[in-house]
Length: 123
Image 1 (tube, helix red, strand yellow):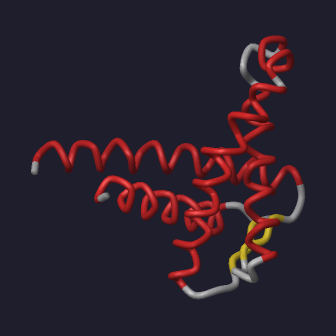
Image 2 (cartoon, helix red, strand yellow):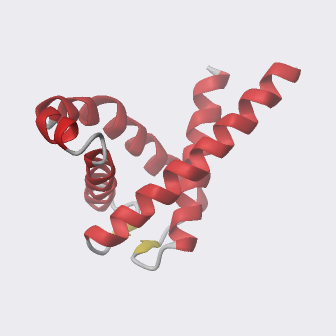
């Protein structure tokens, strides 16, 4: 349970970092709604992303895995769409903003997960 909460918080921080670093991403809400957006993002990445990767397997093989960046951008756009449907205030303005935002989220989330794993091991 603590691991799941830690992942949600790390994803929320990663989303907040992407909003601050990428000009095409906007967040207009309270801080706790970013946690809800992180839950939606986690749902999209755990349920929908594997299905998309399965059906796009020829493109993934053909591009040596680089098509994963495009899939990540679409997952971020889908998260923004669902966020808009629930009136959470997260917006993505175009594919390139989603592409850059997905890169920032991946890098920041990787660093936070790595740091959190070290912190948990010390406890």
